[in-house]
Length: 97
Image (cartoon, rainbow, N blue to C red; front, side):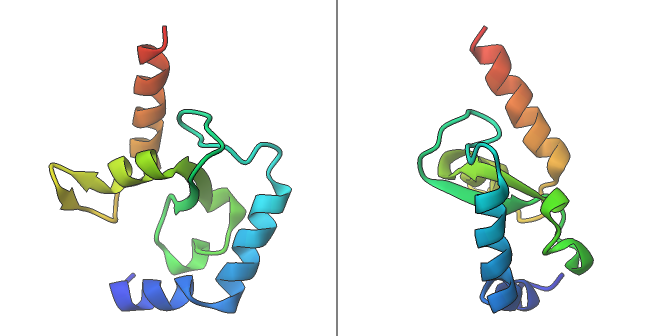
């Protein structure tokens, strides 16, 4: 998806409704990686347009982990996928053992 198209979708009423519904329907609206309930955002695991509003394509992340997911070595990469999220979660669980 092109960046301009992505921005349009993020600003759409449909996304605002999806986001609000997603927040209400989540049993625990917490970061999927560390479990905090502070400074949260919703991350798309895939940027395919057909999945944009699909709850199964969304994961809750705190701002810290959302940032880490998208930035590597100071460079933004919006195409990090769900495997990267799972890697972060696994490394976070290992550091708490």
